[in-house]
Length: 397
Image 1 (cartoon, one colour):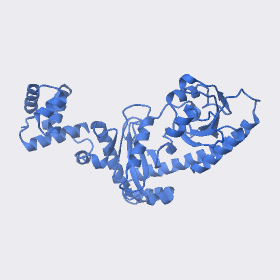
Image 2 (cartoon, helix red, strand yellow):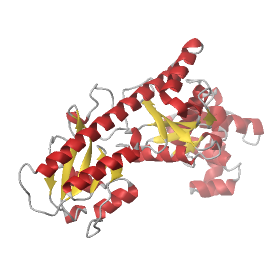
Image 3 (tube, rainbow, N blue to C red):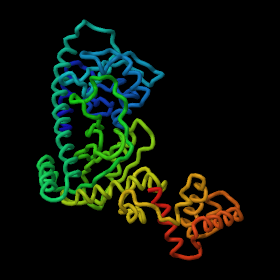
Image 4 (cartoon, rainbow, N blue to C red):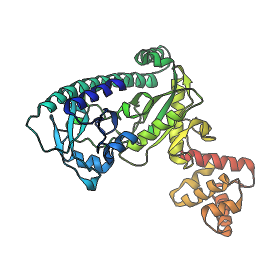
């Protein structure tokens, strides 16, 4: 599919006699065309786009102010060295039925030619074909996403089997490959440039699947709570169950595109085929939740690395804390709760705990005494320490 886009971009380059690149509507590189001359072609913006597959916020801001998201024809954009744009551009919006799906960029140092320039008119016809392809790809991705959502939310029995079979059909040969499920919590879409950039059916904005390495499908999973708090699910293709780097890369890419800070992600154990999707989603969700509360796991947690959080995540939602620990969960005792957890994380070693908390040992001993008074637990007893440790972690999870 990428080769198809490169051929179309090469066609644009040949028509206008200038190097061209194709980016999606989020300014992420899809393809760039060949060009015979290298005289000044590789300006900093084009070089960065090709090497990193994205543009900087400053470059994007400069281009957007010229109304490219609303344009239906070529837009000439002057150079802006302060924004890193050392050469002028012509932007050819790529649309399908009024919806912008991307942009073709041409380097341009010449004065404006005839209006309309017949070369650009011909190039816009190619852009229409690119728009048709991108729209079709987007629809196909949405269809697979709907099937993934159905497979992850269907109840047990025949309904779940039917949903899984539908997803397998939508994925085609990829269904039998090794996959990992990724869960992203707290992802927020960047603000739309204008109404024309939103999905035509009015659905919630999703990241562009093309921008996520290895992604076979993605969707929102409905969850209790406010709109916008739903987790994102991404099905990622892997080369083998021993190489999970594509899952981490996909999660990292999504976190980078979130408009709000604080998003976290996790992924479950890889599996071949689709039989274990429900368990994989439980693991991925648990890993993302653990990444939220355990800094060493953030921002992308692997289920295999969760340690005790694998067990804690299996507790039913809304499980009440043990009564002995309740006093430490009061807002007025947060410092004591933190002290208890760090002390237990440090295997009860006072020196390590005091250093980690940056307090004097005598202060630590005083706090430990208060913890025992409030909870009625004996920190010299292994079972009491285990209860306290797990209860505090479960409360944060």
